[in-house]
Length: 152
Image (cartoon, rainbow, N blue to C red; front, top):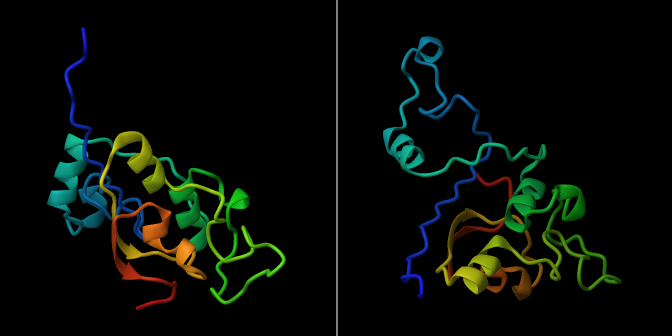
């Protein structure tokens, strides 16, 4: 007996810089926020899905993004938030700002292991020194966003 073909579930992953715990409806306490925090569409997505709420972030954005994308602690990927021009020419694999080229990303794993189409919207900030650091080279079919931190 073969198992029936099942469509893999959709995955929507949101990483928002500087978002506090109670700044979304499903965590907000109306007695403390006076009902000012209302996120009904996001509340509905969380109610129908799974909330992963135990990823502890680094104090700056690039290391946090590197950790989310690789599944590794920032100390093993990237703990700096430096300009993309900072390089170590003696290290062609990990001598650039962002995720070292020998580390895979969640997008690559979803494509290879699950046949997912992968798309990224927003701030990349995990490597842009070479074309091999770009979102499309790191497993994403498409990308709409900007490269670097400190954009307003």
